[in-house]
Image 1 (tube, chains in turn yellow, blue):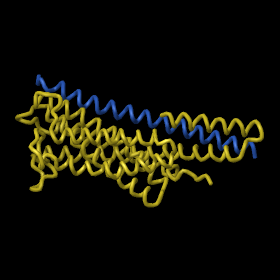
Image 2 (cartoon, one colour):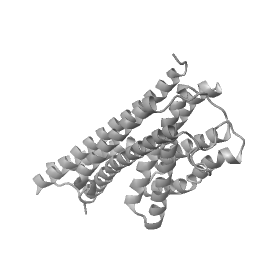
Image 3 (tube, helix red, strand yellow):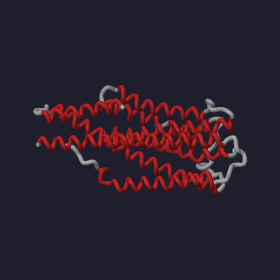
Image 4 (tube, chains in turn red, brown):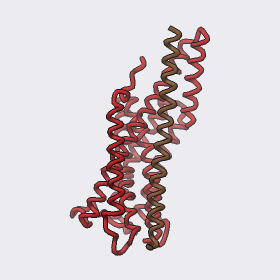
Length: 259
Length: 48
């Protein structure tokens, strides 16, 4: 049976979340450029930190949500959990790409190099490949259920990379700075910089939540169309209208599958 | 002017362009799929 989209009833809440996200991120940008002082050693390049660190956090968070969704799917075979995992994986790919790019743009003026094969950068690149692999196993599994199962296994195994990334600066000698916010001795930076970073963290986390809701809606609609296609195939169309509807569903689902 | 400003603006520009691009991509998908689902539901009502 077709279901009503549960997200459809919460449009106002989602719009509210979007507006709150814009407000907090605007404040975050203002603080990053105006309120936070210029670092004595790194100069303005240090301000990249206010987007680079939240991007790293979102990459971790996205992979954590992929883990939860993957475990949920393997345990209960819940389509909802699979939708959550694949939506978060797409966001994880986006934010991991951004953490690599912003890190590189910070590394060039500070380390005098765009890239170093050191532990933190390499393990983050591995996470990026895990997200790519997650979508590749879905695309090449052949059958949708099998693809979801393979992706869930990769999502669970791939999540192991997150604590490795975080601990890499402690386990190996690296160029990358050690954690300054999640340091065991507490945050190790001036209050104005910490406040700016916290606002940016909150803003980007709200952005992740907003994008996750929107992406989950897209995945829900795709699943709904796939279900319609199956229904149309099991009940052959008997008149022109039925044929048009069935053809349209098939066309749309094929288009979505190619995305 | 600080030489590092170029890197700073590049980092912010890349981040915001990527996020804006992703928002447009998802927004377009939401609209297309919603329209399609609505059309199918209307088609079903017409058949009944």
